View 1 (cartoon, helix red, strand yellow):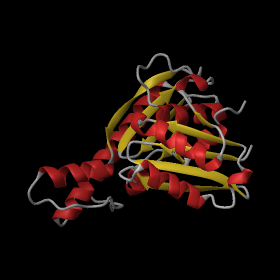
View 2 (cartoon, one colour):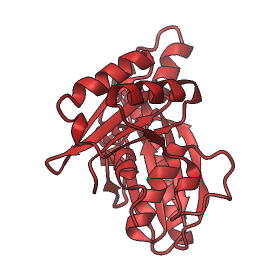
View 3 (cartoon, helix red, strand yellow):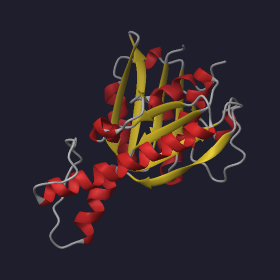
View 4 (cartoon, rainbow, N blue to C red):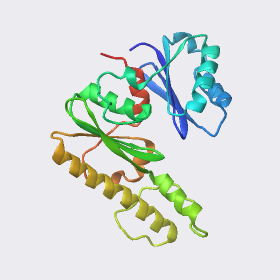
Length: 246
């Protein structure tokens, strides 16, 4: 693998990373920050390493930030920055889905590239996305639902009294003994029940089926998931590091 700086500009966060001594170093910053702030954070994290980068790759689902971010990166590193697009991902056929985001496409592409078998990839982010690829490499579709934090935020914002909470791991009991624990239990079991049901349904349609989870939101419901799932927390960055591999 060449030495590569990779940046994923998402709706909620910009994530970036690079391999150093065989270990993926990864960082993120909220996209409420300015593009200049994000660029400075990337620069600070790669101090004394920029000369080692053979390439810089960017994937973005936020067009309003993309060109400016790329221009700043090119000025900082004095190197061409390549934007990864859907047409670059040749291992999977994405033509059956209209308007697929490059973030979802990249993680699907990486899983299929390494397994060459049917898979369901669940990204537990601000929005939880479910993505399914069949054994021939055709992306057959998916779902998008609110993630755990988004569900909790919606209840807080939409009511007068419900508190603002961060997702927490839920004990094996449906019933909370306080308003916060009832909110945590309700949302966690809702997500876990959906995930369990979806995996069970897809496993009857695609045999065999690999199940992969990514995104920090998985930790809060992990104990409630009944299927065997491979967890790859840094899948979006690994996909960018490997996207043009044979």
